[in-house]
Length: 182
Image (cartoon, rainbow, N blue to C red; front, side, top):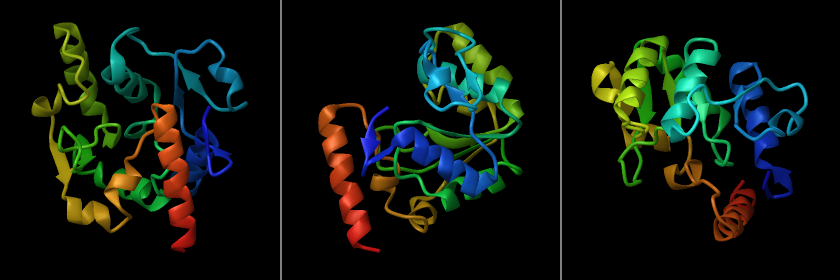
């Protein structure tokens, strides 16, 4: 429930999804109080508890309207235009992921997934492979080149996520920098 620039990240993401897709996102969260975080927002608990990020992606694919765009709710800087771009690309692919400079080379927690991902995700979960990319070899996957991603903003900022107090301080710095560059 952290805030960046005086706005809760969750509130900013709901606003971004409304702008991008014209609808509210589904909040995938296991916290028993999650329904109170944003009244009126649909909340789904992981279908497979303890399955990490892949479990959350799987739940989104099962519970959401097909296809789905998934964004980790600790990413405060994903622009609406990029979410709309992911949604448009997934009509031709089963999974659409942006390239990134992160350790995986892609950003699976800011990506689009079609219904064909469900069974391969379940098979990965059944094998105990909880990596968010564990099923990519079994589906038609598109990796958006970093140059295409950068059209929407700095990928390092877009995919920045807030996991620690230091991350939150850095996010506030990024927010101030973004505001001064407008």
